[in-house]
Length: 91
Image 1 (cartoon, one colour):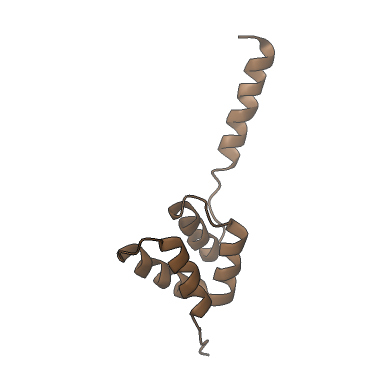
Image 2: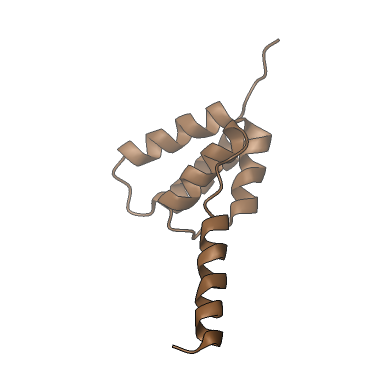
């Protein structure tokens, strides 16, 4: 192996290690779980937007219902349910 290819492999390894950061809060943890479950077919910023509008607990409950269900297209069902979901905040 040449010196260039060794350095290139080292740079790639460093980037892989940087991408394994832990989520900062509950919303990011829920979004990361959903993102990985759907094999990155739904963009991460869109999931973060859904979680910030609906709340992490409501989105997690909806996501768990879909995981347990027997739908053919779970991604479409998740998007449909989160769009139709209304969340009432209680003080």
